[in-house]
Image 1 (tube, rainbow, N blue to C red):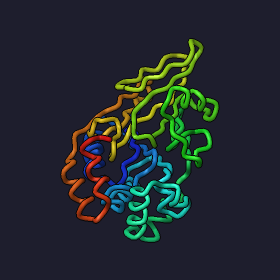
Image 2: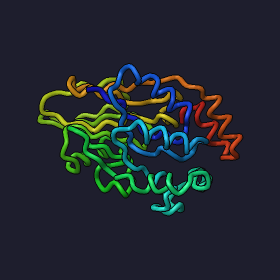
Image 3: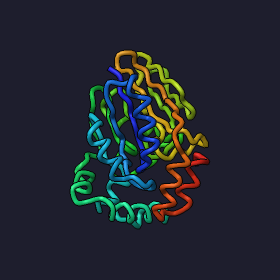
Amino acid sequence: MKYAILSDVHANLEALRAVLDDAESRADGVLCLGDTVGYGADPEACVELLASRARGIVAGNHEWGVADRLDLAWFNRWARAAAEWTRERLDDDHRDWLAALPLSLEFGDATLVHASPSRPDEWDYLVTAEDGWGAFADFPTRWCFVGHSHVPGVWSLGSSGPDHDPRPETVLSEPGRRYIVNVGSVGQPRDRDPRAAYGLWDVEAGRVDIRRIVYDIDEARRKIEAAGLPRFLADRLAAGA
């Protein structure tokens, strides 16, 4: 079995469609690590598409903000403006669906969580090597897939010691090691590569590939500007930052 693992779509329908199209012939199913909404101009379409396609999905901080489970004062001003705008465009059913998503989910030999498996409702970022190594005690599975930072990264831990790869392309598992994999962001990458990112997990082979997909950035930017959302949210898509 192979799974496309998506995170941080952020209401970017153009990026989501491009990733799903790429994964169609490669994956047997879709898993989602949260932040389906926020920043982008198509929250309803992205929620409905992932609700119908994802075999497993967890909540991110933007779901909680839109569903009124996280105080919007927690967010920066651009994220707060996007959350307020998104709240007005989703109906009660959509917001209730977002509010009901779990914070973490075990799926086979993997734990799915948006931020850190350690206190997932604190929304801590796994960025440095030390951030990741400190989280291995907080999940029971061999794999843990995360998002939140919008930057791909891999941490592993085993008898030969810890390892960290801040720029992964392919992860090949080794016997006796456990892994935390950040699959990057579909809808708003922040690693200076504007292409959409997602993970392709081959369960039997013990392999994860971080794929980068070109999508129609100009259309996504146009929609953000037309919606009256902050211009910054459109501009950062082209920069991948």
